[in-house]
Image 1: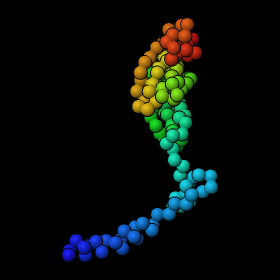
Image 2: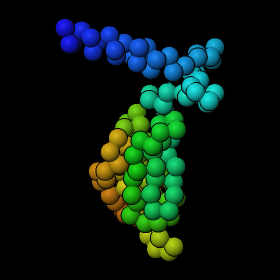
Image 3: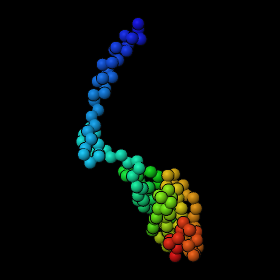
Image 4: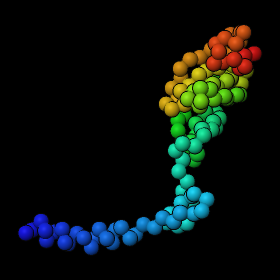
Length: 132
């Protein structure tokens, strides 16, 4: 009988906990949680690239998806390829040659690298348009 008695004691606690969270659906599809703050789901939204000094942060809505660390501190150009599964980043120092890198957007890992002056005739294909 003890397990049944403890179950009856926990029932009021569970019902109290379930009534404390209120989520209201807005007509535009956003949900409003406690405090009236809009909380849009960030999964499945298009990726965006935010360059900073020595890195490119890949965002999915307001959520940080990954960070790509560049070879040089000054990010000059970025371009998504392969349906946003990869990103090409061109960066350089304060002077000197530029480096073009290919990153996986889901992990931020570098997949390939080439110097911008070595890009000729659209080769490598992923770096086309980033040459000097």
